[in-house]
Each structure stands twice: as C-alpha cells, then as structure tokens.
Image (cartoon, rainbow, N blue to C red):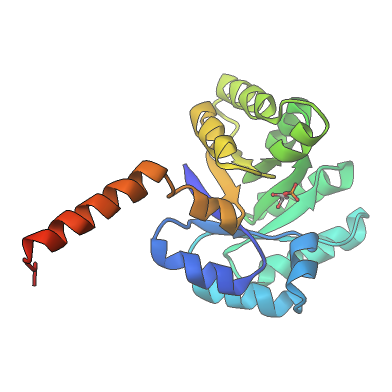
Amino acid sequence: MEFFLDTADVTEVEALLPTGLIDGITTNPTLIAKSGRKWKEVVKEMCALVDGPISVEVAALDYETMIKEGRALAAINEKIAVKVPLTPAGLRVCKELSDDDHMVNVTLCFSPLQALLTAKAGATFVSPFVGRLDDIGINGMDLIKDIQEIYENYPNLCTNVLAASIRHPQHVLEAAKAGADVITLPPKIMRQLYQHPLTDLGIEAFVNDWASTGQTIL
Ligand code: G3P
C-alpha cells in the first residue's frame, strides 16, 4: 500500500518525508486555499522534494479549458498527476491525457460505476472519498471494496484505487484490509499511525530500567 500525503503545506511534507514512508502527494483547491500560497510555487516545491506522483487539480469544468489546464499542469513536471473531476468532461480529459502517457487522478468518486468509467478512461488513480460518504451516513469503505471487486474482475483495467477523504486511523486499517493500492493521509493521521499507549509505556519502562544499569551503548 502506498502512502500519499493529502496536503498543500510544504512544511508538513518536509517534516514527514524523513520517515521514508511517503510515496506521493495529493492536493486539491481547498488545500491550496488553506495554504494561503500561490499554487505554482507550492507545486514546484513539492516536485523538488518528493519522488512520487503529485496530484494537482484543474480548476475549469468545461472540456476546452480543462484540457488546456491539464496539459499545462502536466508540462510542469512528469511527477504531476493531473486531477480532474468525475464528470463527462473530466473523463474525456482523463482519456486524452492518459493516451498521451500522462498520469491522471480522477477525483470526487462516490460510486462503483463512476469508478468503472474512470478505469475505462485509463486513469492512473481513482479517488473514492470515504469520509464524505461516512458524513452522510453511507459506509464509505464499502465503496472501496466494491471498486476493488469490479477492478479484480477485469485485469486489463489498470487504475489504482486511491482511498481519499480519510478521517481517522480506522479508515487506514480498513482500506488496507480492502486492498486499496494507495491511501492519501492528512499529516495528522500519518502521525497517529505510529501511536499506541503500550508502546509509550514500554519505552518508559525500558528507559528507566536501562538507566538503572548505569551502562551506555556508545
Ligand atoms: O484530497 C481529496 C480528499 O482527501 C479530501 O478529503 O477531508 O476534504 O473530505 P476531505
């Protein structure tokens, strides 16, 4: 399972990259707005820092403008996965960019049939939004499972399932059990994955017991 960070905050990327566990980045217009920065500066800094795919979303909704934006984003760096909305125009752009060997991430996926269309359009990633379904009382993880089942029926479909809208570590566990190829994590949740109270208690005991021996390693 690949771990992407779901953030437009470059300082968070710099802080978490040394873990060695970050395989890519996803951004969206809301995260860019939250950063308070110029999108191009953020994207260029991310490209310089991270080795894996960096998803950057188009702004237009109409095909003509969206394809121009998509090509402009793809031209910035080969690491960029052009993020398009799951609409007829978005999937048309997805097909064209994918045919030209650009990575595309189709976002705002809320149904298995939308994911089937996305795979047929040749997307590199489909982003089912787990948390936003949970928010309206629908089990978001069932969507991941349904998509996995459909994609497994057709081995020629090579779109990666990228679990998005992740709200807590339980989502990470369930997405891993469901076999999601990628999960995009808010930095706070990435940090939470390390935590367990028994780890903290164990460390405290080992530190005290080691101190009582009066020995050193180096
Ligand atoms: O980046 C897309 C997705 O992860 C957004 O999550 O929390 O705004 O539903 P959220």
